[in-house]
Length: 256
Length: 258
Image 1 (tube, chains in turn orange, red):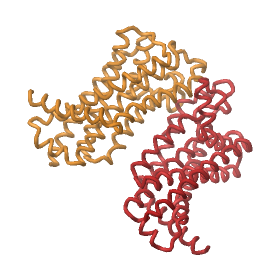
Image 2 (spheres, helix red, strand yellow):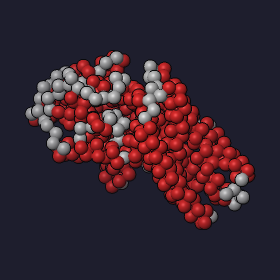
Image 3 (tube, helix red, strand yellow):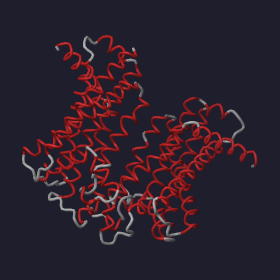
């Protein structure tokens, strides 16, 4: 156990040191969620006047939840990019030789994804509050919202780690990114689920991200809904992708 | 003159063949804009119920976006290859031959036109297959392709400038988020008169990409709106001229160093 934590600490320190000291890593992580927030809230706020759109705390809060969840998922995915880069540079091979407990490597990367997202979440939240976002939920509701995002962050990191461990090349970036992008955007991003019509309603209804998004919006508006379903999906995604990532690690070990 | 044309054609053909040999450079600019179109047209269909929205089909409204986005993606890919030519020394070796500098640039842009036309036809066919009917008719379809070429040339000229100025594939790839910001801060998802936030409407109004999107959109949902078309061609033309002037200057600076 001690060895695993030592490895995890070393790996996460290295990743976070690179993240905080290299603008090429830090800035895109911050810029993309802020950019989506700005573009959606600024460009689409009129859509809250569509008949049937009755989100109580306004369009800024409605979109903030999506951007928060999106930033969480992508902070995880970006960690996978770093793992692929470490494979290409040969660092991972040396790390695997040196680490007394290789599952600590996974733990370290996943922990660093969490810290990366927390940094982004602080900035995105500050910007949303500066943009006069209305918050209807109380402290417990908000804790629920951020916990949901945290679960998605861990799930995203484990998914991308599993891919990176199997493919071991930066060319795998679209494989890590595209499914997450599609899952996020085939949820009710712009309007509530009830206002979606046709095929997109069908897709969004079975999309596992939809309950997370709806629960998150329930938390911020102070009208919690689908809480248990959302947390169950979040935990299920983590368990599933943890198995995926561990098997990926074994695959990387077997490949030498 | 004929020698210059032959050289341009040869370099243009090389650009097309090189792209064709990398399926990711063809498939991604075709598929990604279609995915975004699917997401936005499904998710924002409810916006057509806003009073004053110009059509009852968001798919028709949003079909303009892939034309601009596809041109942008193709441009990035083409100029990454151009930057690679600089990095690998191909441009330097070519500069030792009788090929004129300007031909290098025209050949590069000529290759992109072929790709832009393929993309434009693909987006149009997908749109028609999903029930969009061009308000401007068959003539409008041809005009759409012409507009797509002009837009691609405008972006390509700016991308070539970045490639020639930096000689770095990473720097050209770094343009992607910048172009993407311009696209998202335009009237791509909402007509400018329906944008509620004053600051966003102002940004969209001074953003030339809005006029590119609106020109394409006018052919799809309005018919022959000469004002929108004129503004679209003028914006693309101005961007193209600026880009071409900058890239020509950068090209000669680079060749001087060779």
